[in-house]
Length: 301
Image 1 (tube, rainbow, N blue to C red):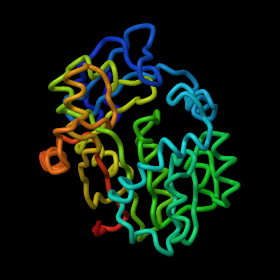
Image 2 (tube, one colour):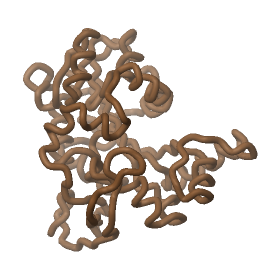
Image 3 (cartoon, rainbow, N blue to C red):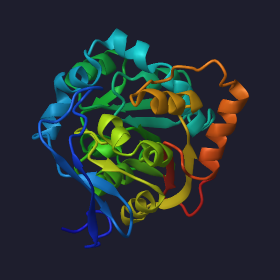
Image 4 (cartoon, rainbow, N blue to C red):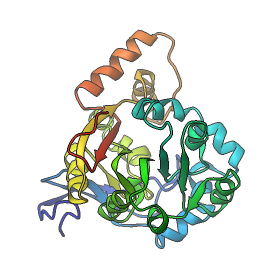
């Protein structure tokens, strides 16, 4: 076996057990080995779900992950994430630009950009969500490669959050992004890390109950994301770390040994929470990473 990212043959199994299958509390029937490359440190497992393309097009994916595929409930669950996404992107980059969001689901983030963007390209495999996106007037495609004929080299800003970890070939994904991006454009790609603090403190409990998932084939970090970008032809402008979950989440996990979402503990003040998040980001130990790439040598972000 060789690493698909860097080609290294030094691969180790870091976990061999049940992994999450869809939403919280659901697991695979059998053990799934999880691998890590000694050189670029990417983490992955072999595909468990067959026909992934068809799976992401169907309602089964959303129903297994969130319990339903209702568009209004989707907005209720995900609208709050837009504040974080604007923190990753800034608010000025989209004005009068052609914008594409790859893996946009129901278009919650694109709805916030509609008033400032020049044009919007929505890429989403889910058939039911694509119908919603079309009704909103977005140029809608199933996959990024499907948009290339019309939009190659024409998209000024590409965003993609929580997508690259799902795809079978991350390099092919990055090459599709490259083909769509304009010469002066920027692509902003976000993905969860392995949440190293949680793994150190909780070990296999955290790995089985949340981190390792049939739908997440990959877990990336700085080294392997940068390598993928350069292999696709990009210049890497920046890589930033962000901590999404606060100190209350960590303490809840330590107490209950189970996911607790964004629930708050009374004595965890806003100041204490902000310091915790800032320190994890400074030490590059946070739970989310953002890759900023362009075709130019330097792109200010």
